[in-house]
Image (tube, rainbow, N blue to C red):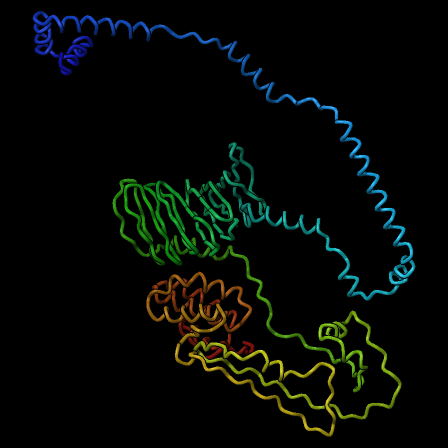
Length: 546
């Protein structure tokens, strides 16, 4: 029989043929004995299959369970301890005797030198040496490190106004500032409530009123947030991590160091970017990029949406996020006034001159006692006049790299500690270090500087001339908030205002210019800031001079 004829027999047995096909196959069976025999085998095979399907196999579950328990008990059984060999006990005893003899001989030999050692031990030790000998508190340090590692691996609530924390089990309780959240928890803000969270990677997120956000994953190297309802504003840090993902209604937003917000709406989800650039992935659509100052709305229908300008609600959400950021503690760069030091002898002892510089500096600390001056004639030497250090002039508007100088030139011009010049000799003016030729005058913006902040400011200033400065806004904000140099903070603040003007964001530009006038009322760019705010170009009469 052919293969197609066998398939026709199986189709006839299962009733899958139509009337004409059934009549044709039955007529063929009456004429072909081989097909008739094959038809009998098909009928018997189908009956056997039905029988096997109807009979339920019986498994001896009790016997199988008993065998599994016996195998587990055999594997987990503790082997009995065997008695040690007599030779092993003898060897252990011999080793113990040899150890006792060796320790006793060492103590007997050290008995002769015990008296000198005790004399040395009774000698006074300086406070600095005692601090050096004292072992560090290793357990406390390890506890502090463990506590710090635990704090950086969890999410902390910085501000909470009526927010509710929902655990993975579904239990809800009030969220308070300082509470730590783990992955799997969710935060819900009822109407007229808000919450600010600090993620393990030092990023900050703010939940607006009527929002519900799930912390799917919150680790220092990866963050995954799901917006189920409302708006989430994010200020992502520049920390090195695998991914930073925010998901809402099938919309996935990937970011690296930017400020944006994701809102869950009735029709779908929307993304608004204030600084930087984000990547948006949606189901059934190719990935797209949203730049600073743009807003994209995606509906459930899957239609392509065109970027639009930020709305008033977006600007308000970003202002609330900025207001929730803690004030940066900027270190003061003004040196403290030195108190007048005591007049020392013009001829110091020889042993002090022979000491290394490290010990000489240690003697000048307040903890060390000043040595008594030997009795001799009063010092009639006229003290040498100290040259006044000229006040640093205001740096120009352009960034110029720091000129390099060899370390030997600076060391040679510094006075030697403890050396006193004779009154008959005229003071030798220090020689100026030879300046190295650089390309700082040819490259604008200080792009060849050794200072990373100055190079960043130079690149940002070059980009501000065009319309591509949005990617520098986050870095400029960090420099303006935490740089130890006042000049860098001033440059970063004014560059942020210019960039916002370039990107047609007048509200944010006004905020930056007002912040600049609060920090630098009489700064180099105060006139520009006042004109941008519509104020008089003259400084306020009550402002303190810089």
